[in-house]
Image (cartoon, helix red, strand yellow):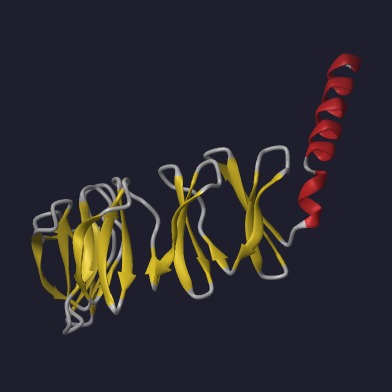
Length: 193
């Protein structure tokens, strides 16, 4: 019993000491891809698991890593970092999202599209609004504010007919149609929650 108690004390003391560096930041996110997003005085950067600052606190906004990349905003433009903290896309987009299904939505000159993991435009900038991919589909909106879904090739697979559309989870997505929230399947059929 004495050894167990001592072991717990060492574990607690060790964890408290290892995390002491977190106190120097206003916010510390979970460590994903070897880096954690941190902020201080409304500026964002990234640290490694030891708390060493890898990406300086120079960004006005930053996202957590997803698929080895993170979107960051500086001077009102968004770009991307890789999991080593290196800038792989200089800030150039008006808006940007996290990578899901190997694609991320970006917005430039008022239009949304999607880039791939090589940072090339995979689906043209032709939508008014967009959200990230999930289960092979992404919600997109046309110029009338109607939402539908595209597949990874950019083909409209569920027509524009919703006031709102969410990402798919377990084969279902929440949408708003005629002021009512409903669930649909990947064919656009209404299903029970």
